Every structure is written in structure tokens, then in C-alpha cells.
Image (cartoon, rainbow, N blue to C red; front, side, top):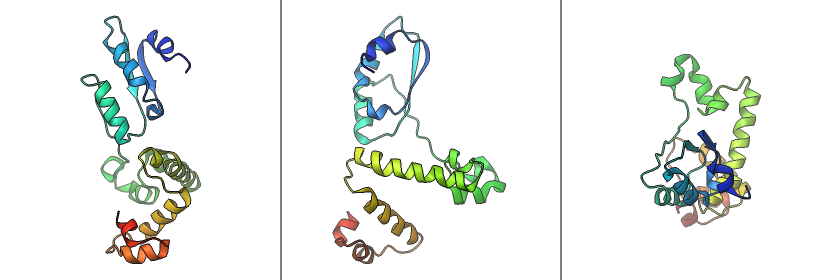
Length: 165
């Protein structure tokens, strides 16, 4: 968007801005647009919520914003009949509702890749994707057990302090 003010100021109704975390520079402009008496638009901002984004949005749009945390499905929403699908597919709507296990797996792989490559670095975590994927895989295999950070560190070729940090 070369001129966001020109693009946004004439809109009315519900305006959805997805992946807003990639454009934190829009928050001050949105504040101005929202405060205009003639404004007839309502803005729905979607995206990953990094601590910096939350702080920036909270400062720029104080009194004009409401945060809604969205979580995956749980059994109470899907019913007992969907327990296996919810458990094995992770609870995310597009994964749980996918028409096949292969489609669900493809969605989860894409989600994981995007999270590791794009979202984690925005949170300030600068670990290469293959390393973080390996770490998460090892953690998932230890799920439900007492965490042995020394053993995990040895397997990762890292220090115990790095794993615990």
C-alpha cells in the first residue's frame, strides 16, 4: 500500500486488515481515521500478536481497541464424537475440519513452517528453523514426562543453560 491514508480513509462498513503485525506503522493512521467524526468504518485487525505489536497497538489505539485471543477448538465445542480428530489434528479449525488426514497434515505443516520462519523471529527468537523444529520435535516426544534439560541439551549439542533459558 503506497498511500495507506488514501486507501483507507474512504472506506466504510467493516474493513478487515489481516496480518497487521507486518504493518505496525498503520496504528497511528488508524487512530486518526477512527477519531474522525465522519468515519463510518469499523476496523477488524487480524494477525499474530507479538509483545511489540500489542504494546504499539495499545499505545496508539488506547480506548479504541479491544483484543480477542482466539484459541483452537476443544471437545466442548466439537462434541465427544470429534475427540479423536481434535486430539490428532491439533484443534485448529482448518486442521480439524480438513476433508482428509493428508489435508490436515498439510495445513499443520504450513502453519508450523510459517510460525518458525516468520512469527518466532518477530518475537525476538533468532533460532534457525531446522534447529527449532528439531527442538520442538524432541520436546513433543518428552511430553508428559519430567523434563531432562541436560539430556535434551546433549541431544541438541547445546548447553543445559540454553535449553532452560
